[in-house]
Image 1 (cartoon, one colour):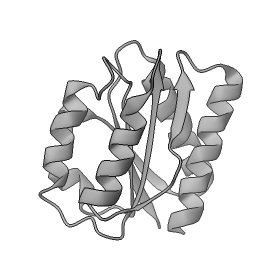
Image 2 (cartoon, helix red, strand yellow):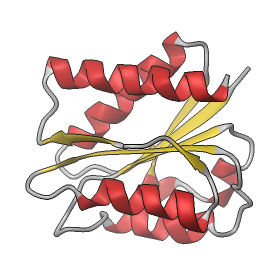
Image 3 (cartoon, one colour):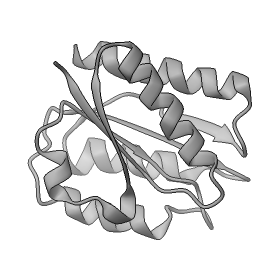
Length: 143
């Protein structure tokens, strides 16, 4: 069975809502999924999965601190060729998704789904459906 891990951080719960909806889309597609907060994640979490899905809100035009730390952890594992995807909520600018995407693609050598999923502020039901569909898109890539 295909495996994915979703690692995310959230400040106000918006990115967490997105993570859970993406998890639903992956599970509905028959993928085994782990869901973990970025502050608790480490390199071992990345080893035995087919896809790594990273989520971070944009905070002061950057990633939230725990996700920055995770990017250093990622450097400890060979991720070349694994599927990657990025998502997050934002208030004004939304740079975190591009930072995660570029890091997975250029530094880790991952097969990244582009564009990543950006949702302005709190996801509506329509936004949560976009997240579920994003999860299904990731599942298609790893099956």
